[in-house]
Length: 178
Ligand SMILES: Cc1cc2nc3c(=O)[nH]c(=O)nc-3n(C[C@H](O)[C@H](O)[C@H](O)COP(=O)(O)O)c2cc1C
View (cartoon, helix red, strand yellow):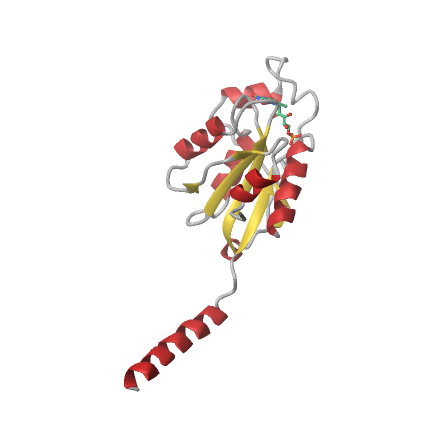
């Protein structure tokens, strides 16, 4: 009888402390210069019920900025300078609410654009499950995820997903809903 009471007490304590803890949520953050990654981010937010937030560069990219055929265009200058951190608009995020963060970006020269580095370095991502996703012309997501892992080895990077024409089963596996 004593043992049953002890178990009951333990169960009630666990239940009460669980009730006191707000349920952690997922957040989808993304940068998109021309709208493709924005649509992919919306798809993930809809499938997961996650909050959605855009990473907006302080200075938006013009069509000329994005033209990689112009040797000194903005994207080329940023790509050739690994330490470049383009400013982003402030993001009001209560990090304590989230345990999983989906981070989306277009592939630029096989990697995530440098604004993603700006975001990662300005955010409180330690201890969170990070799920990178991208859109691209054809480059797979893996090299960009490897670069992020190398730059931020203490963060918990999961395998990424290229979202172009992704099928439902693959998306469900990515979001852990199988
Ligand atoms: C500066 C720049 C560099 C790019 N580099 C690559 C690349 O290396 N590989 C690739 O497959 N696509 C590349 N792309 C194509 C984009 O990744 C693709 O169009 C992406 O879906 C655009 O997403 P967004 O509309 O969200 O900006 C590049 C596009 C730009 C503007």
